[in-house]
Amino acid sequence: MTDVVATDVEDADVLDISKSAPDDRATEGPFDESEANPVRPYIDLGGVKILPREGLNLRLEVEESTKRIVAVGLDYAGSTLQIQPFAAPRSTGLWHETREQIQEQIARQGGTVTERDGVFGPELLAEVPVVSGSDGSAGTRVARFVGVDGPRWFLRGVIAGEAATNDEAAAQVEDLFRSVVVVRGSAPMPPRDLIPLVMPPTAAPTD
Image (tube, rainbow, N blue to C red):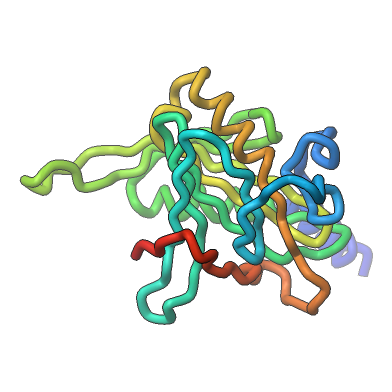
């Protein structure tokens, strides 16, 4: 009986369910709806709100089969930032588990991943195989995967372009990620479910 209990404890230690977020998240972002400045002119996308800024272009990524909006794409500072908000438990986080899943997925694709400490906590720097050029030749794309656990939500970001390798561009996109407001809502949702996103009148969806 003792051996079984010890094994269960060891398994629990392997799976890190703690929340992962900057110490100043509540004041510097990414924000919960309850923490956001109510007078700021946010673009309301349902599950997230985006603060407009000069040079920022917004795209909504739509799942072809369901026509459901599955991600928000932000083009800024020569870079792209894709964000997705997910429902999460109140007392535990999703980023530690999600990082493992991302690493496994990229490895299956033949890519490489390095885990490192970033401004939001642990992040992944990946080289992902892609088809480049009109001749279909193989290449790689560098991307940063970041994540923040908030109260009852998890916000995932994928950074590509200049901000994946250039410090100045990275600082601008990190500030953009910090400014995102997550609107979890009060309706019950299973953990890991995508918080519904909606289209504002001024946005155009992309497949």
